[in-house]
Image 1: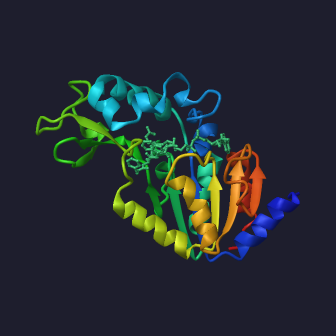
Image 2: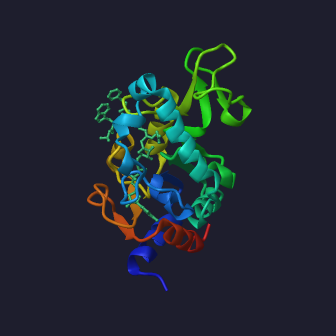
Amino acid sequence: MYSDLLAAAIDRLNATKFLLIITGAGISAESGIPTFRGKDGLWQNYSAEELATPWAFERTPEIVWKWYDWRRGIIGNAEPNPGHIAIKNMESMFPNFFLMTQNVDGLHGRTGIKNMIEIHGNLWRVRCTSEGKTMMLMDVPLKTIPPRCDCGAILRPDVVWFGESIPTAWLEKSFKVMELCDTLIVAGTSGIVYPVASFPQTVKSNGGFVIEVNIEPTPISSLADISLYGKSGEILPMLQKGLKH
Ligand code: BV8
């Protein structure tokens, strides 16, 4: 029924008091959303520097805005997949649980999960470039590209771009849960983008147990205690079904 590695991961989870999960774009791949660095990746036709940076937005706001509109068009038709659902189900199966996602697509939030931070922001939210206040894009009149705040300043996607620091509050929360968790599941991330790429090592150094879920080996594989190679939409539900909690 289960491979030995899957059975070992389930044994570990059944002994876990605080489960931390970190996800990346791979968890949304089975919802039809292209990943960043895969063969059909989002970055394939563009370089991150051209689009996901503050200086790109300053130089060509319309191009950057339209790239996010294109992505919202794809994401708007996507549904959370069994991997997202399994994570939501796990939330109530552990004494303590926390999800940290790098994804900006909002799919985890659509499962109703509560204990979560979207550490790179959310592309359905926008932020005033002058006042810093945020609002949902659906509440903004789209008269111009990019749209403008009622103060007149242009609005930007409320995401963390390359070269931008992750908000301190989110970083502080991240380091707290990495200290407290006894098991980390890291699913669907290439382990390339910092500072999140360093988080599995931080959990390891804190004495935590690391379970990796990915379709292929990544830089995280060398430090993971268990690497489960396969689709997150298949593996995460199998892990969840094996839980006794
Ligand atoms: C920071 C939001 C301090 C926007 C994203 C030079 C100048 C400036 C900075 C740097 C620099 N060099 C390095 C840096 C640091 C930089 C960085 O790490 N760069 C990398 C490329 C080397 N990091 C930053 O800039 C961060 N801030 O460091 O602040 C600072 C400040 C000033 C100057 C210096 C430092 C901010 C990083 C956040 C960037 N924002 N997104 C947007 O999305 O539009 S990053 C983007 O990549 C997404 O958030 C994405 O989630 C994230 C990580 O990618 P993954 O999620 O891992 O996706 P990927 O496609 O790579 O991998 C998918 C994986 O899934 C693969 O492994 C695949 O095998 C697997 N998979 C596929 N299908 C499945 C699957 N697995 C399971 N099942 C499947 N079905």
